Image (cartoon, rainbow, N blue to C red; front, side, top):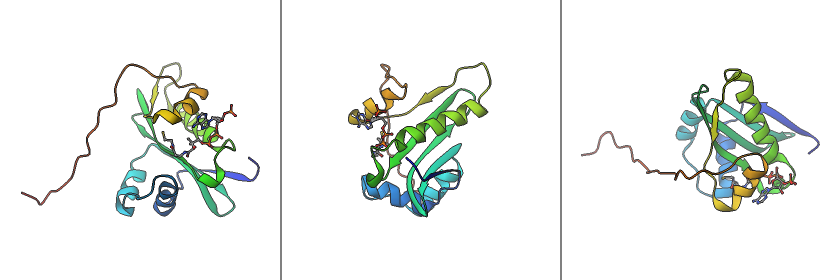
Length: 142
Ligand SMILES: CC(C)(COP(=O)(O)OP(=O)(O)OC[C@H]1O[C@@H](n2cnc3c(N)ncnc32)[C@H](O)[C@@H]1OP(=O)(O)O)[C@@H](O)C(=O)NCCC(=O)NCCS
């Protein structure tokens, strides 16, 4: 899409929360997002003029495993190739910073209706099931 600017590691917590809210509603707190961005390996954001319109980030260890998180294109901008651009930018980061000649697992969890999007970009599924818990932190509780 013409006129889109790509930025690396410049996403603000406010824009993260805005984009999250545009597709999923209630967002994490600014403090949580700030910590998450600080500890991400890499974050890409796309901008239409002053407006932040898409984001994705990568967490991981760079040597063996990278994990894609929070791939979001604002609804006003979906279907124009920006999702593809986000993933291309993340993979370019791995190519630039991983160890040459080795394989790195690039993983993500996709909801079923988004799997075709990732398959178009070269991802496939395996038999492993994603296991998770929402772990509540209460350092001062009983
Ligand atoms: C999923 C998402 C990131 C895709 O971004 P997008 O900018 O709309 O996608 P693109 O325009 O770059 O599409 C790239 C290709 O994937 C296809 N595609 C995109 N979404 C698709 C879907 N849900 N099902 C099937 N194909 C899809 C497009 O048709 C396009 O195919 P083409 O290259 O053959 O024309 C976007 O819809 C989004 O942000 N959704 C809400 C948040 C979300 O669910 N994120 C993913 C969490 S797993």
